[in-house]
Image 1: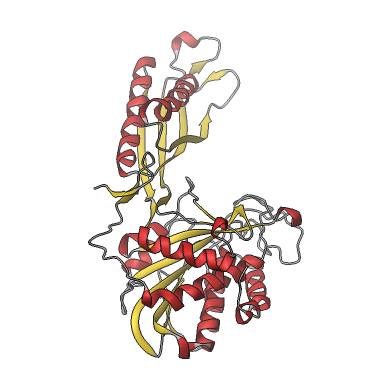
Image 2: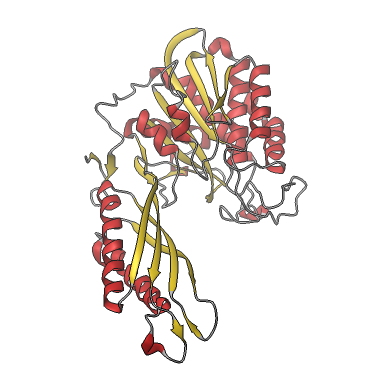
Length: 415
């Protein structure tokens, strides 16, 4: 791995910052302590700092000695409502709140970039904007940051970001053009039956039975309505019904998540789900109420910028074989930034099984190898150094609706 000595020298600070954020995690739009620390560090380094963007977000700007294009680097700051079970010196001090997804590392990496660039400002061309974003996990801070002008004054030419990724080992990166994270939607369903005595089922419409048939029927949507070469998920994650062992439930409540990559599937899946629900309920004599909520759209990487970052990452990691394609059905509101400017969001391997640092994201014992922090800073610093020479594609030519064709493996445009 090729990390310059000046970045390697930042590692103690990176680890200290990351562990501070980990000890004092904050949920979405409540990142006041995190934001205050970020602001203090940025101001001490001479960055122009705008605070209170989307409540707790921070936008920092540094202009180089020579004019040029504007590159934005995004880092999310929020934690998760999870009780940490790690037995470590920097474990969360806040009951029921934990950095279980790596956002503490993302924030530390962005601060590391800020410190390096401030100390080497004489070599910086163009402008760099750092977007410290609140509430990625929920309810979403990217869109309100955009609405409050985070990408304006100056207007960014491209936006990049990374996610520390325990699905890949330290020393690797997952970088792929087209959609790399899914449309992330939610449905809420109430089934209305007719309750009654458990010994007299002929007098009832059993909401539990209806819900069971709905859940089973929903499994056929992906297997029978989706092209086998495409990816989709329909998951029922919550079911509540009944009050006693001998009472037939009058109502059942279900919630689930729906994931897909393509725009066509994003429109098809809610239609098919409600059609299944409607017909199953009709068959059993039940009624229903159905709500479908679209959360984050798919994260879609620009092919030109993605290819460039693949090369940058290969140089840092020492071998092009360490840069692999990677997609996930997880959702991310980085998607909104990539709808406004061409860019790339990528995964940086952070797992180290030999050290026991390989628990999955959102696990109560999640942790990662902190050497990944230096790798993240090095990749971003190289991006700032090389960005001015990159021919950034026009957004009129490569739009956020660019999708990845799973059949051909090529990037095409689908409206």
